[in-house]
Image 1: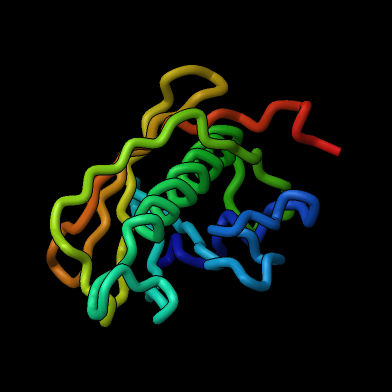
Image 2: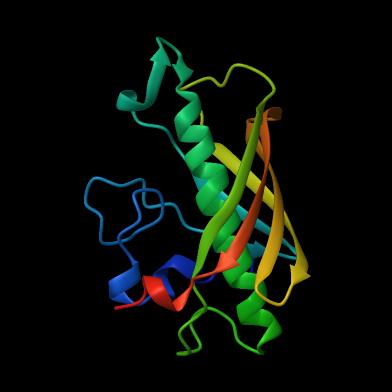
Length: 158
């Protein structure tokens, strides 16, 4: 995929790269990365053994984290593109926080396969974006969710 050159999370300023889900500087984190795939967004992640709910299945909180960070990353990609930029062009992207998160667990999620989150982004306000995400293990949709992502308020900035 030609759009999958650089993840939006790779472009976040160091001060904002500590999120447990997607922060590249959080040594204990998941290091989730979100890319464009055409007009949709994609994040893939292979759960680790510590992400187990019961043997053979992924803990639901990991799926919620995947949907959450995929949503805020997708919103950042969309606003960055709307502003005329792409990851890797040297311009720092906007940073988002979660305004709301809704997750529906559709099927038990096996722990022995990579997970793929596919998102669709919709602008609902100049500072709010809605991202609907489906998480797949192989061809099975295991979870779906919706994130309303909000441009990071100035009060979050150092």
